[in-house]
Image (cartoon, rainbow, N blue to C red; front, top):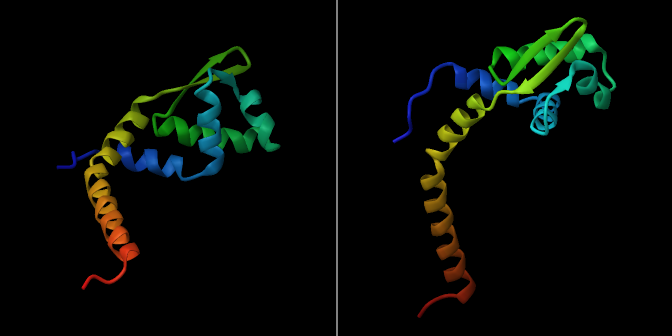
Length: 114
């Protein structure tokens, strides 16, 4: 049975729906980075990157820490673990369907049976 989750899962998937935010998370999986470092590969303004970062922070996926004028971000993995656990609840369903499809395709490849 699939575990019931709070609205936090909705925020996580909403945040993950955007390729820029996924790229930011991928970068942060390698270690913390400043907002400027995160903005650099995208060629967008710090304001635009800041909007993505606020959404990621509201979803609990990152933590921002200010030190003077510098803001450093780091990945928070707990919401990703929750999303992974939710997806794993459907793994048995897909595994069973793929096994059935495989059997069907093998029978079709053998041709009609007498």
